[in-house]
Image 1 (cartoon, rainbow, N blue to C red):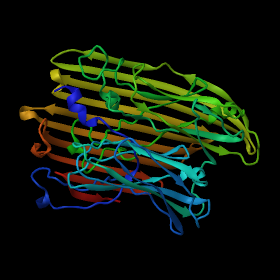
Image 2 (cartoon, helix red, strand yellow; image 1 turned 180 degrees about the vertical axis):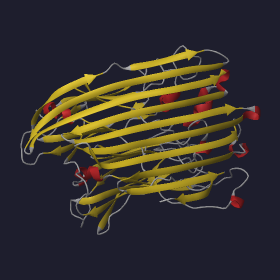
Image 3 (cartoon, one colour; image 1 turned 60 degrees about the vertical axis):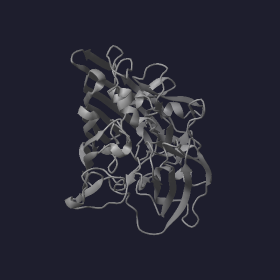
Image 4 (spheres, rainbow, N blue to C red; image 1 turned 90 degrees about the horizontal axis):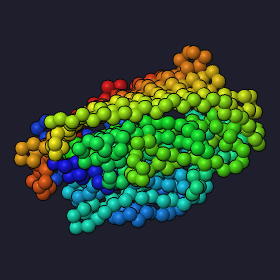
Amino acid sequence: MKRRIVMSMLAGATLLASTLLGTGSAHAADVPAEFGTDWHDPVTAAPPVERPSGKSCRVTLARAQFRDFTPYRGTYTPPDGCGDRWSKVVLRLDGKVKGRQYDRLGYLHVGGVEVFRTSTPQPSPDGIEWSVEKDVTRYSDTFRESRDVEMLIGNVVDDTYTGVLDVTVTLTFHQGRPEGSSPDRVLTLDGDSALTTPRNSERIVAEVYATGSGGGCEEYWYMTVPDAAPYSCKAGQGPYREVQIRVDGRLAGIATPFPTVWTGGWSNPFLWYVIPGPRAFDIKPITYDLTPFAGILNDGRPHRVEVSVVGVPEGQTGWSAPVNVLVWQDERRERVTGALTLHQAGDLADSSVYTPGSEHRVDTEGAHRLTVAGYVDTSHGRVTTTVSRSLAHTSEHRWTDGETRDGLKATWTDDESVTVDGRNTRTHRTYTMDGTTTLGAGDRLRTVLTLGDRATTVVLRDGRRTAWSRLDDTYTGDATYTANVPRDQRHAVGTSSERYRLYGSHGCYDRTLTTAQGVLTADRSRC
């Protein structure tokens, strides 16, 4: 079976974001022998957004039924009765769909700022409902004035794909002082990728919602191969991807994209009907601390800020990378000056070696380093910021002729260190993927897959640890069905599980979900 057939269920993935709510359990006797026409509503093990007590106000941001690629457009009005300073702002999407539909990607813009990006679950014939929550407090500046709203979940509805995506999005504002320091401004780039920051900016952070999508091979970029290899998805050099941001042409930040698997991914939607893969419904932005460049950006003139993805063949599309810029200002100064003092970019290593045989093989290694430093002279003194980032990727991709057996084992690391005077924040991110799809006798297609999303963060002040956290979100699935037959003849079976662990100075969260044939069989919390 060719990859273009096996992976066809990925086609049409589109964007959305955050934490699913709702849970349940079942005894083993309730599990059917195979998938039926209905299954448990989608759920993740991730924690819901914590909400403070006290007064809150809710605003409906969007209400739409997505049938095609026509965006919803409306107007946002700030809440009445909750002031303009909030301890927390929580976005919630409630959706429902039934019939037959692919996974779709979606975005939500308020005043041009992308506040939410997500993908959708695939429905049962009888219909499903799902909910997603996201903490959007950092966009408070955007929410203080009336703004245009645009939302799109690109969809196709016809005689075959009947699922209409019915969604409502709300914002809940909790009155009070925010726990941390929210940005004073949230900016977007103009049509020429130009950014003009306030002249008194003392901290600048860019966030990029980078997503490989669009129905082509970049939806599963991690399995692409060099042009010399006999595989259905070729990508020049191979699968190494790196999201870079530049300021006036100079490299300002590097990052590893998360290998998101959408809910039709790995040729097998039965893996994802109840539990999606990590981040599938919460597409988190990559963040880059651009404060070392503040002395350059604060001159009052527009500066070109561009995002590119290393490894994508020239002229090939497939990545979306909208940019928000978060700015903290010095209220006591009209102008903050400074300078970029250090810029060290290492050589980019990107090697994919193809080995032919009865089982073809591509081994990939990639790595890159970047360190930048700069200072700003603020009303509270000179502040020096040093940002170092180190990326690494290794993968082993094996497949047989016809791609009837296709497997990948891959690890990505993204290490970041940000030092602001005596305070150092170190983050070590590790993403893992280990899976195989096999097309066997009787066109029985089986996928076994494990995905990992891990991060450890430590905050040091003058060498002493003041805070820490450790995240481990692991998904495991095993599903089999008969391919190339009508839906009611697939005789699908499958199990899946997710364990989401978050430990640190602020407490403990540990939840495990398990499913079989679309039934949620266990929901266990350990903290």
